[in-house]
Length: 264
Length: 264
Image (cartoon, rainbow over all chains, first blue to last red; front, top):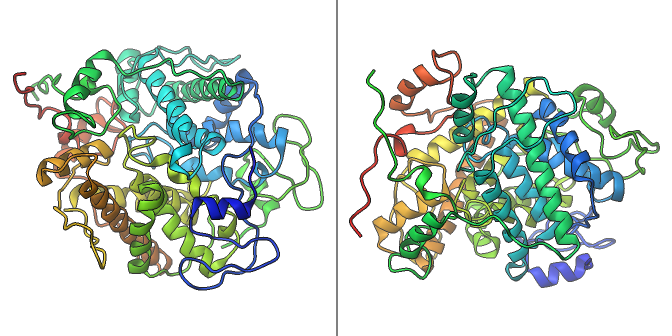
């Protein structure tokens, strides 16, 4: 579904950065802007993609600029090839920022950050009433990532064979450290780089599978939060007695399960 | 510093989505792409912004589409007003995806996700050798966020007065739950929405201050990891005996500090 730029601006009530073609508009800041290319409103068009081809591209792209770039650029690159504009004007290198949990900080896994961005790009909207499906797909991807032995993707010519782990978390450093423990490899090893490249391939493939299913009108969320976390939510989520935790993650991976640090 | 599209493609070795003006190119996938508007290479131009004005805009924008949209669109919107293209073609509503820790999942704070994206947009590059400054600025923003009593921004006409808390984390649900405990307000309350709008204003303001300093050649990282976390890194970070944790976060907020769950 496509809407005109003019209608989108009126309906969404968002700040206007550009100008309607051929005229000038006044920004929320009060100053007239210069006529320029206008942004294409969301959702951008999507066509069925080959999930295996995208996964293979993501694996290769990981070695160019990391996980967040790999997942987003592999999907958008294929859409650019099939559709052209507006994807051809997407600054692909931008999503490099999310690599290694954003700038190497080890927070949210960059593969997931890239997958969430692309999912919103092709299914989302600034209109809150139209964001439900993007959120459903994104949450399914995050839950799948936390609960699945990864990586599921294996390239045609792997540099190393991989150990699979279940991270139980969407955070980079949790996933990486669990893999280091299982593989007995270090964070700076070539084996770890290969593992994360395969992880990017895995996340790109699953994301495309869900987006293809959504396009076909067949998407249904299959990966739910663990039952234990639902028990936590009964007391802490919206509508509960306490209403003090806004979260859809596996609580037990960090809370109430700690062992003391080994004696130094 | 600006480089031609042709040079950027040659130097960065990235996948080409678009086509050089007036001609056709062959994508990594092997198929010729259709000539189209090419992406503007990073970094996009930056000019000094009024941090207080951007903060006020971010506060207002939070009520439109959440934290990640607010921080990114407030900064990019002001750059669009001052510079025009390429900012005028930026799909501002896209960053809505990061709201409430990505699709309401409670992972990475959306204000930080938006700040990191914009920081990379105006200071980053796909070239690994040129990413250091973007990473330094982003890590400073993340450490500042975790260590500062927030929100620091107060609108001209606040809907509610705010309790400030130090989250010690870059995660949405940690920050929100600590604020709920301190304020005795619920996650779905209007007071919590106002608090997160002020938080968006705070993060946008600090980000602009750092980007202005970088523009002036005066940026120096001032917010470092806590000394306790540095002790952890001595054994777990790259170059250490174990090398099994790739992370720049306050370890103690989740590790080895747990109290048991109250009796149900």
